[in-house]
Image 1: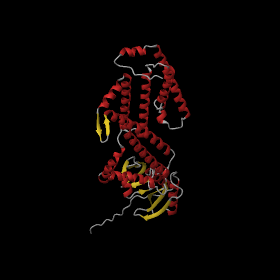
Image 2: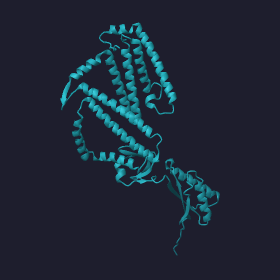
Image 3: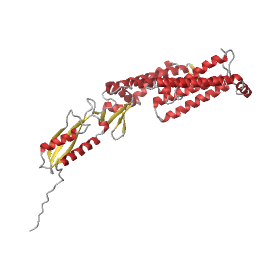
Length: 424
């Protein structure tokens, strides 16, 4: 089958002549049918996999994922094979590059969104990918791209035993970007599948597997990109030695943080969801990165703790053995109050709270003989500190206050005895 040649921008009459032919209208009609079929196919796939997380392939709408432009590109190739026959149709020289560019843009954008979320640099990368793709389409359709590539290929220099040119560097950068985006997609899909139903210690183990797979894929992708440029990979041995020296002197802290992150995830001494206290900061571990760990306090503040600190310093893990947390409150009553009744009422006030555990049961003790009354200490356990600790203590104090008032038990005011001495 004859190949589709690009139109020449220097000859506008060729454009008008090619687009004014009757076969161009036929191609446009066939392309409209391809768009409708692609939309229908994506809609059917969305209905069949409604419960699955296919954000890269399907997107949030029918046409913003990778599947729609990919199916459209395949149908357009089929239409070209059926309609062109023995002679090429110039309009396909525009439609096919547009479909290819659209598929590449959607793939790159969706993978970046899944891999990095709402990071500020994602929008910049999205615009960069779009501009590069559409500029390449315009240059290809107009026939300028081959000329530009030939000129860039003439600018070359020798690096070691390899001959490099500006064209080689550009193609290598584009290849590296494509490989890295593809590895990000694979690693994000694996991470989503691994962490989908994991909890507790299993979540930490799957997290370390996910981080390891992502690092390996990125490393392999980088090697493939360098090889595609034409760089001799044996030269990396010298670079590896230099990097090792740099790590030994200037990057030892950074390397220690990365190694500590994998040690934490492998040993599972701290897991995502654990309640910890480190450097006078208490909170719940929300994520364990390769370099640092995120700890979120009940007040909403987040602390970014280097992983090396979690290895070399003392860390209190309040939920390593179990998730139960103890809390206490104190109350004073008058000296003439019945002690047994007061202890029973205080225990009932704690047991009435749904968050307080029945095992171990709340404990009430006469802890001191105060200056103003009898002091009782109430100890109780709960296992959901993420829901708040101060609000539970407030609820129990309110229940104790109401119970004592309903039973006529006095909570004494501070009392002082004043002795007056008069002169004779």
